[in-house]
Structures are given as structure tokens and as C-alpha cells.
Amino acid sequence: MAIIIDHDTVILVQGITGKQGSFHTAQMLAYGSRVAAGVSPGKGGQSVHGVPVFNTVAEAMEHYPITASIIFIPAPGVKDAAFEAISAGIKTLVIITEHVPLHDELDIMAYAEKWGVTVIGPNTFGIISPGQSKMGIMPNSIYQPGSVGVVARSGTLSYEIVYNLTAAGLGQSTVVGLGGDRVVGLSFVDVLRLFETDPNTEAIVLVGEIGGNAEEEASLYIKEMTKPVMAFLAGSSAPPGKRMGHAGAIIERGKGTFQSKVAALTAAGAKVANLPWEVPQLVKESLQKG
Picture 1 (cartoon, helix red, strand yellow):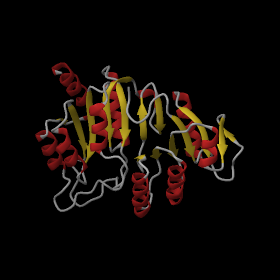
Picture 2 (tube, rainbow, N blue to C red):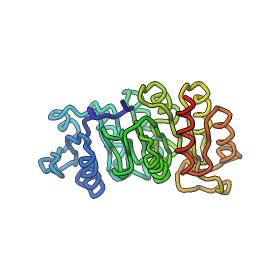
Picture 3 (cartoon, rainbow, N blue to C red):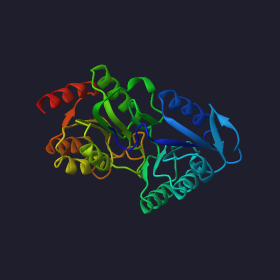
Picture 4 (cartoon, rainbow, N blue to C red):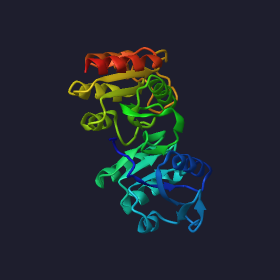
């Protein structure tokens, strides 16, 4: 079992003929993902790694039972691409692109909510259900099927933690990258709810960072959860008032600090690791108690 995507997910790649779209399509195919078609306006009739290319999402969906789309479109075109996918009936949308304008992100989320569409990103590494399907840019080799759910704001940090989980023999049910922007689709709480009801997820790892209040909001839900939650937070040494990479990683007016997040998560019952490689041991301990 997994959340959001599994082996039955039929995938469309928007921007498939671009450098990033083409490269990561090959990687998703190598992983076993069911990439059925791609879209690149004006390039219909071509193929990329054996995947047929169409001019529009609607045209692609006339030929294949597509349920999810991943966007590798340059930032100025992301809003149009997202609206096109949602209008055509796509129900899961992964937006890899960085630097999407804030107002475009707001419009995308409002339109997706209206039509009941799940949006992951923008500025995300994507989502992977190990052994079943991958929609994203994460390395194929570090994941292993299992029962640990992972939800993260940071891509590279999540890779390190997943690598350590796999090395410790702890496979993953699904790994979700929320995205590093201030406005994204899924929240920590959204994903935690899905993991809480997934029968094959036994423990959850939350990978957060300074800035914003996403982790504090998550802590309110963690109090109600029946499954153990482990956390690691990046940015313990970051100075207040400075952006630290992600648009959401800024501390403002005393809110979003490392200390406030650790305090909130700990009070909710989550186990917070001091270092990434401590996470597997905390997971093992929580599973043994369960």
C-alpha cells in the first residue's frame, strides 16, 4: 500500500521534450513508473524514450487513461500548464519547477481546490512510492519498499535521511516532497492524515526546516495520531531574519525558529533527532514499542 501514487498510476509528462523533462522521464521509466505520454505544444507526433508526445493534455488523455501529471515547464508557463492539466481532468499534479511567481501559485492552488486536485509542489523533488511508482527527480537507488512514510520540505536532506533508513533496513511506503515555496499544494498535515489512515505505514518521518509555521501546525495534528512520528529539522544555526535557500525558510518576528518548532513537535509526542543519521534508530525504537 502507498499514498497518492502506486503501480496503477498512469503518468503524463508536461514539458517532456525539454532537457529536464527528457532526462527525468528516462529515470522514471527505468524505475518502472507507468509514463504513458508527454505533452509539448508544437511537437506532437514525436516520441521521447519511446513515450509518445502530444500537443495538448486533452489530446493525450483521449489516447491513455492518465491520472497524474508531472510538470517540467519553465516558471512563466507553469500556471497555464497546471490549468490545462486540471481542466483536462488530471487528479494528481506534481510541479517540479522552481521560481514560479507567487500569484501564479495562489491561482493554481485555488483552481486545484475547486476541482479536487492534489498538488505537490511547486519547487519539489516530487513523490515516490518505492517499488511501485516515482514522479520526481529523486535518485532511484536509495529507496526501498517498506512501512516508513516520509514527508519533507527539503529534497537533499530527505535523500540523506532515506539513504540512512534504507541502510538500516527500514523501507519506505511513500516519500513526499511538499516543496520549498511559501505557497504549495499539500501541507504536512495533509500528508500526515494520509499516512495515519494507510494500513501499510507504521511510522512517519517528518523532515522540516526553519521558517513559516508548517511544523507547528503539524504538531497540533500529531497529538491526535496513533502512529509514531519522528522529526528532523534543518537550520538550527541559521540567524534570524535571513532567507536560507527556500522561500519558506525565513524567520520573522520571532516565529518559525528552530527552538519553537522543536518545542512544539516534542510537546506533541514526536521524537526529534539532533542529526539526520539518528533518525533510523528513533524509528526502530518506536516500532519496537508499537
